[in-house]
Length: 223
Image (cartoon, rainbow, N blue to C red; front, top):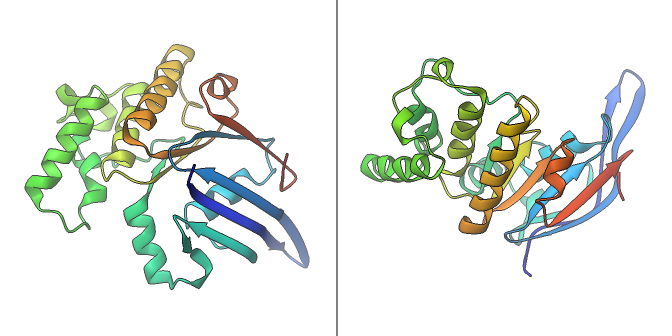
């Protein structure tokens, strides 16, 4: 299987006053194209740091990170922004929807900086809303939706540009059990259909049963 993510000897630390706090310690990670991966570990283990590095929201102190064969550390900030915009979708625990926008507008938002035409935008949004079962809610605003429906909008927004990598941070944390199971199944099905790689930070044990692999991060070290 070809790697989408390849990390070698990655380290990352933060400064708290005079103290240097290590978040990731000589980390090695390979994730193949199309894999559906769970990332687990206790609070403070470095999960958010690793997600931020994988999603090009932050950079490591040392080591090498290749995303689809591109050496991340040699890229300018402008190029990293372009890569993130084109290749990565994000699904957040708190949904992060724009309250004054409709479902359609929220999902279309990541496409506004793309080179596609407006009709192409609309076609892409229509397709993904149909896939997540929200075509009939396209003109609703977030406060008119249930938690599960809001998360479906967030999934549609992350996937509308057909990203190579989808990063999800505790996507079922704010959902009841039945809805969480539906969201897990939906993400897994879409991963298989689209070929997108999913990296999901989660404490939800139900997620691990649906994943190709479960990565455990403890004190900045993958076990």
